[in-house]
Image 1 (spheres, rainbow over the protein chains, first blue to last red):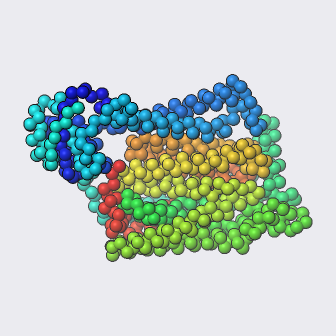
Image 2 (tube, each protein chain N blue to C red; image 1 turned 180 degrees about the vertical axis):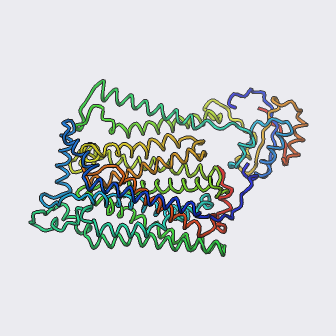
Image 3 (tube, helix red, strand yellow; image 1 turned 45 degrees about the horizontal axis):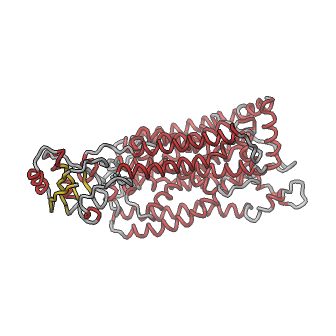
Length: 177
Length: 450
């Protein structure tokens, strides 16, 4: 998504209703048209299933970021406080692990949070250098937008436009990036 | 796709079968037999006592055990005023552990119903009858609590000894005497009765609305339920803390923790959630609650996961401050449990932390786990066992100390209480349609999809 070629040409179906676009996804797919993505002003239950998107791996990413943060702080506390420069603080052991738990927790959360912000920007093509694909600005307001990448479909532009209209699209526009 | 889901019928009548009744009766009888065996062993001095003696003899443990025992003597048994240990103390302490555990399980049913009403939550409507069925057990535990306090109050609660408050007397304890404004028998009894009566009555009201709504429909009962649920939450906000002080924390009279109310609420809450989840999954397996889908299970799993973490957070917050401040009058509480009494509470201590935090945290982390009934059940059992040991650990060291242990008496007592609890819940479930068919939020709940 973030690495599209500059001459991509898309057909954009604009729908008025969430129920219609949800049904349209199945119809357009069964007509043999490959859907690039659907953009909606609010989440629609079952849309991801209908589009056939693979299950998100965001949980795995979060877990790995968290684990990295946790292990970073485990290493840092045990190395500095216990091994490299042991100090007796409050009469506790050098390896006073209960005292390290809060900071281990903090770093787990911090790494997860920052990691997820990064993941969000990258996976949505919103990084500082990437140019986001905006098919129709109204998809942030009241319209439901289905984008078809013409370069990745065998059917002609006219054929696809017919399929989109038949599925309930109020408008069909061409978008060139 | 959500909108194409076929929704199962909402007309379901739970049947409390003769077979279930037979099994529960066998369970209760077996429990009574086990308690009898345990009582016989305890009266003969076999079991916990032996443990403690063996450990006292061991040089390695000697220092820690004696140190803790000595300090404990000072903390809980004022010099010279302590009467002989009776084996019945262990029996009553067991009754008390289970009373607290199942009181929590019962009242959390109302807590769950109440905050779902207050938040006007829709998703939980379909299985609302399950949490709603739990608080019927409150009168049972309430009466048992009163009986236990009258019969064995002096054995379980050190602060009930009158000599502690006689200025200049041989047993005079200025610290405990300083708490007598709150911790005195009449006020304690008033509070004890108030907890059970207020929780039970507010539940009865909301329950009545719920059953009435089934017959008449409309939103009138829903609106009223929100009001009374709010009242319950206001009452419970205070009483959940004070009951934790009274029922558990006052056993170790010298010691106190400002986290204790939350800590007990967290423990009760996640126990109740595990019981609700386990009941929903079991009923589903028996062919009931067909309208409960993966998303409901997922949310219940999230609930248990989140509140296991919350419990661990509160547990650690309490432990951490005491560990770091290292004040003798505070650390004694953990020393008794961790290394005191010959280390007999060390295993329950670690089982508690492992089963209440590490186990549910790892098992319930993934999305698939929360949607798989068998994994949910395993997690529920882990949580239930873990939180039993939570209350065991909070109550036993202060009441029976070195005479504690885990044997037939403990297991039998759980069996009796658990079977009686299941019986009570089953009876409540038969009293109405298993799905509240006129609940205004039912439609939302049936289409719950996450």
